[in-house]
Length: 223
Image 1 (cartoon, one colour):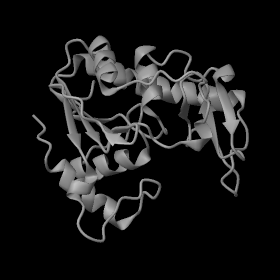
Image 2 (cartoon, one colour):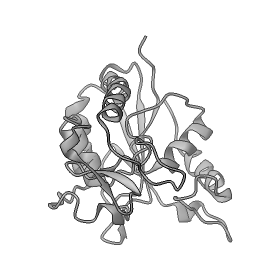
Image 3 (spheres, helix red, strand yellow):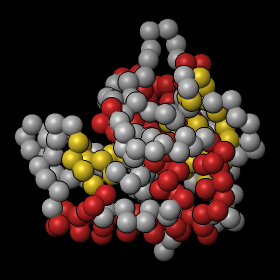
Image 4 (cartoon, one colour):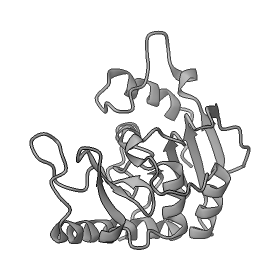
């Protein structure tokens, strides 16, 4: 049976998935939940329908074995490969690739099922040009995608889906995104942050994260 989905993460990192699950009570996994996905990578993945996602030639261990980069799309598969006791990626093997293909084929079907979702969906995205030093120069030619290109990609993928995109702390060129579109809603976390509070996107257990996101999410009406 296909899920009736209402809230779906579009990344860019793991924090947003954790907070969505905590606030809205969602339990189902989705395609972009646990990757580090800069905006260019997100748009590339949607536009190409995730073609050859786990092709061996597209994957490279980066940094001091800190993560695995997809050199075609420009995202980090930060949680998709086993690590040693020092949290370093051990290796990319054929067995691991096959395991990931099977796992993400299931999540890809759930993503595709949104085309026939029986109700509206809110896509939620934290950040835009996320700092990701491990992805510097990957891929070598940025597409400099903006929110309108994301809307166009989702419209092509899901032409009958009633959806909104909630962008939180979306910055382009050091400035908040100011694009206006009926399918886009923009939020800046600083407006929902009280004195002494701050977000820590790299720390999923940071005490202020849930409080700040609960204030942001309280402004979202799920139809």
